Image (cartoon, rainbow, N blue to C red; front, side):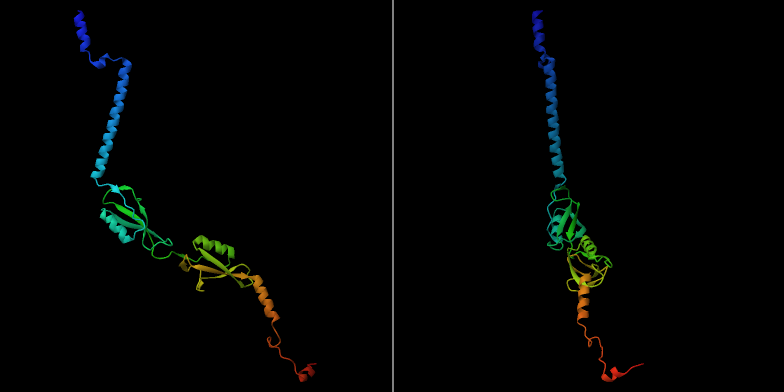
Length: 227
């Protein structure tokens, strides 16, 4: 009987000989190991799958001309579509300013890249209505519209501080609605009542009988009387 009992104990598997606590700990460790292996396999499969489908990082084409950007994208089997244009001072006309998606984005072949380019023409802005407005109001409206250089020139007029005219750097007078480049230097002709009064006083002070076409009476005329 004793030999039979010893043989039975030897035949028991090693894990059956472990206590309950050790057995639970072993199961937990096994689960963690299995999970890590599954995650590693999934990541490896995803990487292989992505490379298999030709995904790559979108090259940076900002600063290139349209032709250069299009050629570089076509070399990666991509197409380019211009969706917007804007004017940026100091940048060459026609260069790529922005892309969607951004450079460095993981992308696949045969996709369309949307770009914004620098326009070849300076942005123009219409002259707003200014008749009857004060110099401060007109200046604020012009700068709010996008004009970057606005100066004032005061001219004699009884309508004090009202804007009489707007002209460009060539001296051409502009009407409301005229479109001009936003870089145009605009000059406001502002009414100055003080200058108007000074000019009027100077004009009156310089007048003489000759200038007023007043003729001096002759001795004969002085002796005449209507009564």
